[in-house]
Length: 345
Ligand code: SF4
Image 1 (cartoon, rainbow, N blue to C red):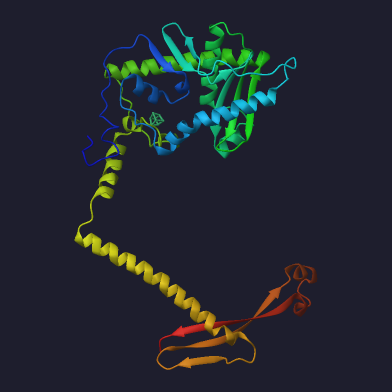
Image 2: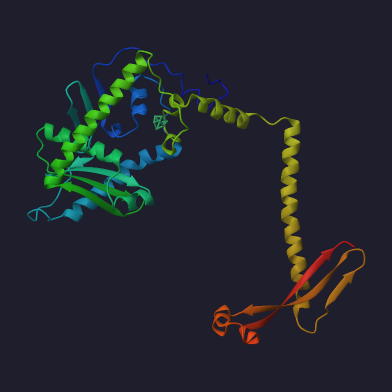
């Protein structure tokens, strides 16, 4: 249970309190249908989901601005492609519902043209590059749910277009399913969506009946790291993160303060020492010139010596060719001069 000292989780997290009500029907958000089934189950059970962190919030907040840019780009890119007519993206944020009998997928589309569903995503460089190969599973499911919802509402689209926008750059890329492949894709995805919803519903009812928990037996996967439901799947993480938060939040007492001051002074001295060493090396650089002294000595302090090193640089290709017959031809001698500073007696 978070304490009042734990500022990060005190408002955001409550202990899991799954609803014990069995689910006959379920509504899932279109934008979440592609997410992990444990996340969807936690949400359906009313368990706590931590709100997105600062970086993700920034992404959501700037989504609107990025969406405007992507739509303006798409309209001009497609201008005149169909019967030389201007292309307009309409029905922005229109609600669509995919009715699966007992269950529903409900969402808001980014928009549509006369023939196409349009979904816009701002992407990192890596995801943007990946779009050339295909659409990520989670986005694909979301788009299929929206396309099926639009068709069910009587909007006669025949393609689904994902517009990828490179994060905070004016670079765009599209991926489109159209014609026969569009309808084939919808058939397959409809089955996937139905299966996913059935799995989530079964999990929800098992947890509600006390026959299962959302706790995971294995270690977190990479996508679990920022998942808002991770404390339901890995309750031990909460203790670990809280302990870290408490440690950081502990105010420094006098001894801590002194140790921190010493550390800061030490770091400064190291910096100053490096600068002094560099200045001394630069001072003795005159000894590198030929004809200069070979050694400078200061009693009790140390000395500086000019050393010359001769290195043999072998030509290995030639060695192979000459099979070891004329060795002196196989290397060059290279001389380098350096200064060695020794301190102390
Ligand atoms: S923490 Fe991992 S397993 Fe749990 S809901 Fe999130 S993604 Fe799924």
